[in-house]
Amino acid sequence: MSVSLLSAASVAASAGGPALSLLLDNVILEYPDGGGTIKALDSVSLGVAAGRMVSLVGPSGSGKSSLLAVAATLVRPTSGRVVIDGVSTTGLRDAELTALRREKVGIIFQQPNLLASLTAVEQLMIGHHLRGKPLKAARSRALDLLGMVGLGPSADQRPHQLSGGQRQRVNIARALMGDPRVLLVDEPTAALDHERSASIVGLLRRVTDEFQVATVMVTHDTEFVPLTDAVAVMRDGGLAAPRNSGQGATAPSSGRSVFG
Ligand SMILES: Nc1ncnc2c1ncn2[C@@H]1O[C@H](COP(=O)(O)OP(=O)(O)O)[C@@H](O)[C@H]1O
Ligand SMILES: [Mg+2]
Image 1 (cartoon, rainbow, N blue to C red):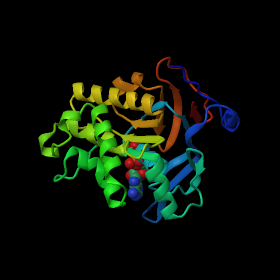
Image 2: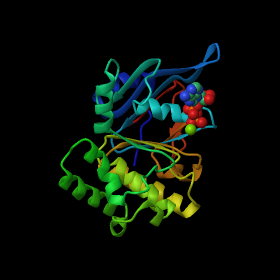
Image 3: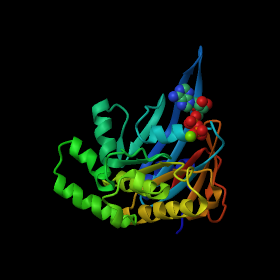
Image 4: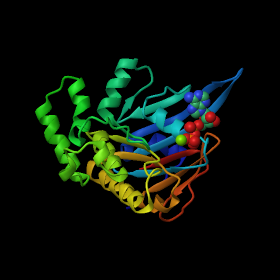
């Protein structure tokens, strides 16, 4: 699969290129810190097209989780633009942001955070249930997704009956319930052994391809980077030296990266 890394100038031109499902444009995020502020994201620009998967690596505290939180519209940037599937989030009200997030964004954190009393299929349906949506269609989609992640036979099991890897698969299936266009994944394998980690990253690759989502995966496991289309490196809140994961080509040092 070929990936092009485009320069700053080509971000503007990319309107005529591959549609970007996720675009962060010159994003700055500051947190209050004592009397001053900490710049968690320092002029970050990143574009990811449908069906592309980017690894996000970098030392602890470099801003990886902050980038995902801003991309997920969970945290508003101090300045800069976040565009999800063509919709600019700047100026949206909280309720509109929540609706956009539900419709377009799947979020997968390291810990699956499943509800102890619910079966696997119920974990996927609970969001629909709480929003008063029809349950028959939700159940059918939930069972399809559990089948896709290899958990068809475990649909009626509760978290304590599942392995760590199986719980993470439920987490992934749940993130797909709303048919998201963007998938944001924070260290999905941190709590798993090597074999399970490899199969989880392989599953995320397959999901990215089959659902044509734009996926950003934070990982400390550089071994899995070749399964993704490109790697973006964070340091001190900035995105530095992105490159194609396969060929190791260095991108322009403009600080802008488009994975199209
Ligand atoms: N909610 C917060 N309030 C204040 N500072 C924060 C908050 N979240 C993260 N930070 C700071 O922002 C920087 C980036 O953190 P983070 O995005 O969690 O990095 P990473 O995920 O790469 O470890 C760090 O200096 C961290 O201490
Ligand atoms: Mg983090």
